[in-house]
Length: 495
Image (spheres, rainbow, N blue to C red):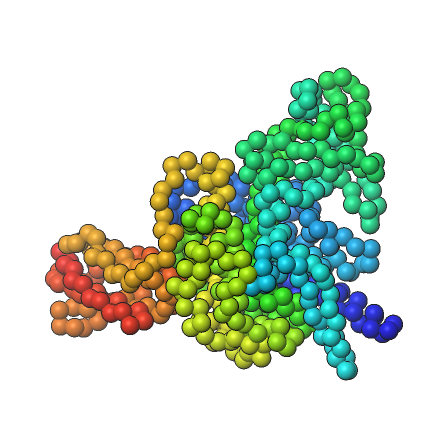
């Protein structure tokens, strides 16, 4: 038994490398998602633009709630677990292994089903153990949104007592781990906290902090200031980081291992390692080629569920390294699905997404690229949808336009504009299913003069510009091929 315990602790310590998408990939996703949203809206969202952050160490932060950036939250969600505190354990080295244990969700099991993880230990006879139960990623996403958790804040809080309007400073005590320390706070919901920056100051039973009333020049009991009003500077360090953490949880559902509850044991995961590797294969997809952002406002009226469920079920098609059958993919659309989620997912033909679909792979570059090309564009689009949700709910966008939220039902090749043109024109098209696409230009003799598109494209609407400055005036034809759809249209160049 002693050797089993020792090896299990080795598993916990070694699991530091078993995080989902490397943190810089999460920062990349949120920055590209915001740019996609801006591209489609046609304007920046000033408050979000100021707090989106970027990629790199300037946006890491040394501790939680230090920097007011979305990309900081996307990074830090793999550093600490502010909701369940599974990173805060007595045994040194254990914290890193469990910090992301709540980043998994098998949607087929139901919305709030807790996760149990089968682990195979790497010594004969290779015993299997189960760890858990742990809350799932959707559960955690909801808690960040609805405020169902305690926020421990480590620094001074300057605020107003809502009861009497007095100015307060709340001073945290420094407490040695393993006890949680800081000022214990709760918001009513993330959206309401942004619009109306009020927090519940929770009862202090452990001597975690002191409350000094500057108006009456005396210390008061926390119960005398049950609701505090904070300034925008404080609010922004909480809200934008939390939104980034929500983006992180959504993005983890694009990783097959995280949709299977595949914690890997001492094994690494081929797809996660490849995506976070030095070759940076994720750069293949960005804000300009991933398709339209996902509008989460459907008649089901459950935006967060729409985004994470439709993401999870696509990644769930693919396999991950296991152990054993836990790494197998499937095309089931079970759990607490909503009607429009099913309508959208059925329109994608997920069963045709291709290999690998089992824990045995094979884990060739071709198969790894296939997982990426089917899941990564969508996670950029869905994350843009999450940012859109926040902007709509907080009134950062007040002139709300109608965007496509229903499944696209047909292939469309539109007439170029302008036509006639000199020397540039734009060609737009629509794909109801993800597919390989070619869009080529021919002269009147049938000679190919330009290839505008030749790549795999996700479901969505696209446009591409042709610069014909090196071609002579005359009639040209452009032709699209996608799946079994082929269409040709005429355009006129007038130099």
